[in-house]
Amino acid sequence: MGIPFLRHREYIIVPLQAAISDDEMVELWGLLANHVTGHDVRGVVIDVTALDVIDSFACRTLTHVAQAIRLRGAETVIVGIQPDVAIAMVQLGLSVTDVRTMLDTEEAIAFLDQATARAAR
Amino acid sequence: MTSLLDESTRLSSASQETVTSTASVIIRCDADVVSARQQACAIGEQLGLLRFDLALVATALLELAHNILSHAGRGEILLRIVQDGARRGLSMVARDEGPGIADIELALRDGYSTTGSLGLGLPGVRRLMDEFAITSVIGCGTTVAVCKWVRQRGGYDRHLAYCVGRGRAPVPRRG
Image (cartoon, rainbow over all chains, first blue to last red; front, side, top):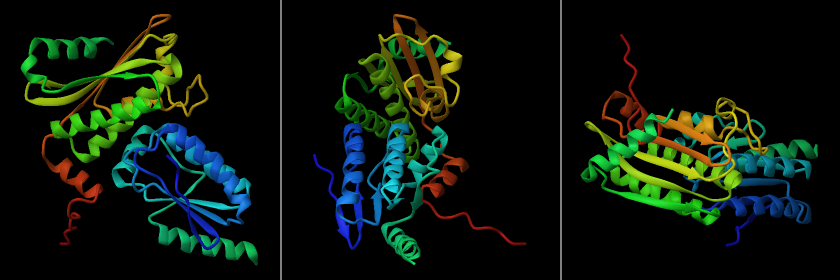
């Protein structure tokens, strides 16, 4: 199963599917890091709305994805963490301190517009 | 430390009629983990666990399954409904025949990991679930038993329902 990327201007939006496996998570890491350079991408929005669980492995992988993309010179925003998933993450002891999280894609795009405009100035 | 293990075995064998659903899932690869999670959620839903608690159970199950895969390579997870007086709960027992844990106290500490992970697995699972017991023998394997009780309807429930966006927000009263 491939992970779909949606292109929106100079950003890519990655909607993660509910039954994403650990292998696919790791695959996503490599794919995105490569894609960002090849296509002049300024920002990546990872949409986790469909995920009903984010465990320590998924959290670590998402953080690694974001760090790799930042090293490539682009910004990452994670959107759509469900309320009950958020509560479970807190109880587990997870944090996403290195990654920007937002409510939805619209908010993330607005943030990326500002961030890239500031960088261009 | 073994009380819950004994307890869940006793509960399920002594009163078979209370065990309405059980499943044993062999964990060998990634796909097994996905299937175990789906089965746990299905049983939890049947039991009447709230969506909020299902998320906690699913997260705990993933952590346990990952522990099996990364430390032992293979193992199994037993899922069953247990009853203790009036309350019912979902019990999950994760067993493997891996190398075992040398220092359980240390393994239950936040941030301790032998595999370079976040080290939140076992202590995290303990926080997520209502009951937690672990036994481990070096060279023989590890068994972790956990249980989540179905919450009684009440004030706390309403608060949680609000937290997960399914209820009305509590209206602050002004005097």
